[in-house]
Length: 137
Image (cartoon, rainbow, N blue to C red; front, side):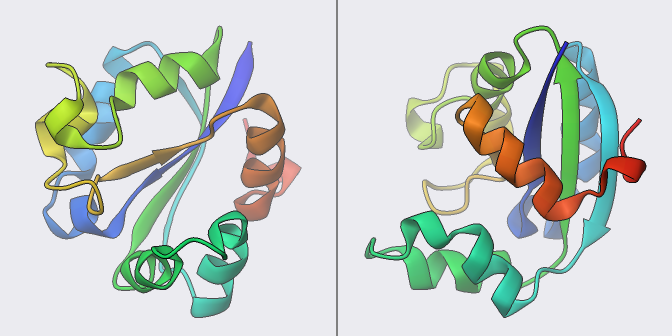
């Protein structure tokens, strides 16, 4: 079994889509190994997205991710990282496949409702950023 990291972003939480997205996650066959709702501080968002610090969208991303609560998740499934990326759909919901979370719930490339680790190395950093080992099932 592989673990991956996911976030239900502030846009989806504010639109009351959390339950529907969690249902899609479980329908796709993931086991939720950890879950919490929290509001990211400015420092947490800056540190979490530091890989994008030099990109033009960094400031707006940090602002967006701190505007309201998020739900952070550690998900588990065989080949979880690829499976979650496929379940999320393309970053731009206009290009996302039918039936994917972003096609169903995202409103734009910037407000795309969910985040997911893109590689095992990323998941290995992102999961412990939000979860102590003792918090994971």
